[in-house]
Amino acid sequence: MIDDELIAEIRDNPKIIKYLDIPLQHSESRVLKLMNRRGTREEYLALIKKLKEAIPGIAIRSTFISGFPGETEQEFEGMCDFLQQAKLVNCGFFAYSREPDTPAYKMQGQIAYSVKKRRVKKLYEVQQGISYGFLSSFVGKTVKVLCDGIDYDKGCFVGRAYFSAPEIDGKVYFNAISAVQGEYYDVVITSCDSYDMFGHTEDFENE
Image (cartoon, rainbow, N blue to C red; front, top):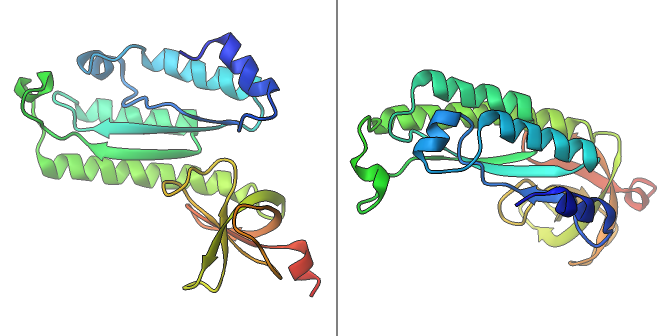
């Protein structure tokens, strides 16, 4: 439960990374009810707004399922609109998988795989635009990066900013005179795509 006490702890405790993974699963109230999940679209948007206002710079990640039995095209479009409003930093999207011995297995309105695949692809496209806008805001700025090692294919070091979970979210590829795995470095971001950022340490620029 994300209450005022937890929000204050995340905001005030310097040992806590300003990052939250909230698995919302869907945005539309009727589908959430079918999923037996608490909350509504309005409550989710209000929570996200509250977190962003209370904790400047917080990174919020989530996962969503599309193609749940009975999900209409309008509700799918509503989820796309939700993403545009929420502007989450990172998201994962999955097509509903019909599993035996689950309540949803026998539900009416099972959706064709091709439709689910199309919807998930569209969700990723929407989020890519949002993510690119977020990452673009760091171009020209210095970001603290935790070095994860060397990417030999790209010929540079690779690491993560605070808003990227390991092996899930995007990375920061950077040039440096030297870098040690597990150490933090100030990296000047020079470019990005919708997933990763690229840059160099200040000492490398001066070489």
